[in-house]
Image (cartoon, rainbow, N blue to C red):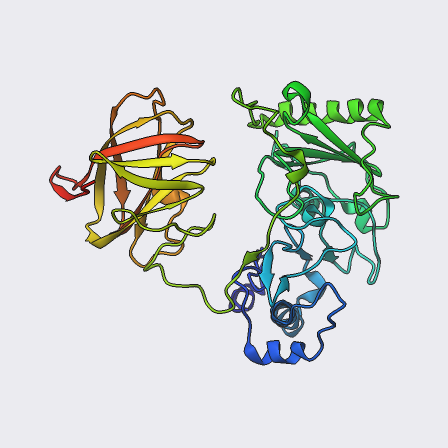
Length: 441
């Protein structure tokens, strides 16, 4: 509001990301109590906490719109309200999911329509008729060229756009576009998840390519007609092979044009051990009702920490044992890691974690450090990735940790796969090479 007040007499651009409906899930208790009395147990949308969060978002939007009216600049201001993904269907709030995207399938972090389809509202009195509606499909990369078009601003020489101007749709007309692409090469263990995928929308049709998910690690496909099947329940890939082939050519051209980093086939993949029936199976993640916890005790978002052994706690599908002066990590999954809470804060600066390690596992290693008072305790920006020789031979490792604050915990990810890893002679040295801590196994 203060920004708009100070810029009301000149052109301005305001980008306001509202965190009101994002995790952590908490809201004003008075609003939660108000919506508790309105809960319908038969309605899939029945979280009073999330309803209260949406209420607060609505209040914030109203404050912005009221300010535009008060400053008498509403008639010459373009307003865009949109979301970047579908509703969260994997966090447990009030004993249910935070929200529900029915009749769409899936939610945030999935490739189905419930994860990628969201609402958009554009207000501009000179162009958009009040109360009008368009069923044209757009994407976030369309906003920039559209704003230039609405303001009659010419692009810079040689400037290219990933999206198009949606001015025709704002005027009730059709858009001319070959296709829309969505790239999500991830596989979070949530309901309706898919292996790493990319999709293309063309007219009423949607094709999902699952990388290396088919026979002999060829790609696998799901095809849906969204006009007849908005819930994506009937896979038509086998019935329309020519359409699959044509739409997959669009996907391939998109990946080449954008220089996308693609998932690689796993040379160690054993199809006999893969269980495709588990695709899409996931459990709800428990969410705290109160404010975020302090970072005094690190927690692991991928699962509960195991029982401490020599002060180290295993997580990510691994276990720890002590054998002949070494910490032996046995991994049964793809994200083994161990966490150690320091008995006292280590000084800031470039610390070095030194150790010997032998492994028959696979993948890169990574070391995280937790800094005093920082949430979340472990984050990629406070980590170092390092190459590992998984040849069963003992190697020496020295990992530099550029800590900007006192270090209170260490997390070692020794590999990215199943196997056995032995770590010994583990110590930490300060910026001047003096040993400041060592571990005895």
